[in-house]
Length: 327
Image 1 (cartoon, rainbow, N blue to C red):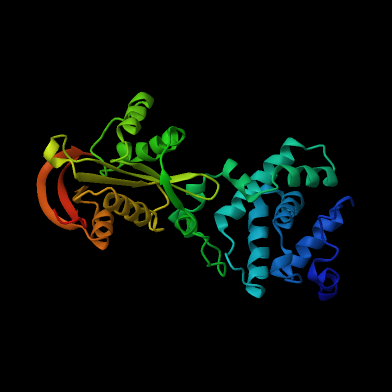
Image 2: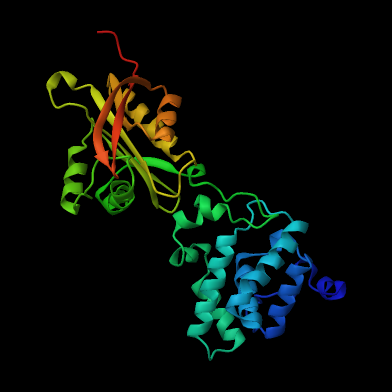
């Protein structure tokens, strides 16, 4: 691309979208040239222009070649204007797939009509979740596919997550998170996913002394849950509780487990409990490390007490003593 062509759109002037002015094929080509030549600033490369850039490559080169073309363009652009959050190979692939599908569904539309309908339909980056789940977009596998030099990570869910008490409206998400561990992990010794009725009963049993909580993002998406449960129903155990924490698969090592467990500890202290016990399967090293980091100590080991996923498993009892008033 010539420097003169890039200079004509420097600063973002003359690039779509234009408001009332129709978008023409040449406008999309000019946008692509400006990105490839890094002739606009990072702040001028808006979400709308990202979508339109994908449209240009899909129309000009076809869906199969569009990803490679867009990848090269973003590499060149970001080498000159390093972004704060980076671009992500999986996200780029998602936009290409969404735009290609939209273009195929509107094969007879002109470029202006197609561009405008795309911008209306995909006015938010959350449109990606219709194609890729958020856990997929933020998974370790997806992050491993960053395109150099775009190595800055996406914001981790734990950066903005907050913890609140669980409600009945959260039960479907809680069960979705838990089902993965029931079916594919040794984190729980359950082998059957609870029914909806059983999960409602579970929530009802978690009253004021035994709260169930969820970690949620700004948009309300539930990305983890925790609970304090009675350790033993006999009366003398009333101030001893058991903690449970589960993070949505694909969102580990983002601080969510720590956020949930620290919140449970704080709630247990405020409720006047004396100790928290966690039962952790012996092969779950990350969970053991998390509990040690938050003051839990190993209190014992039960050997070969569970059989799941074709092997016998130990259970390690970890205990954290809590501050309590003098008797």
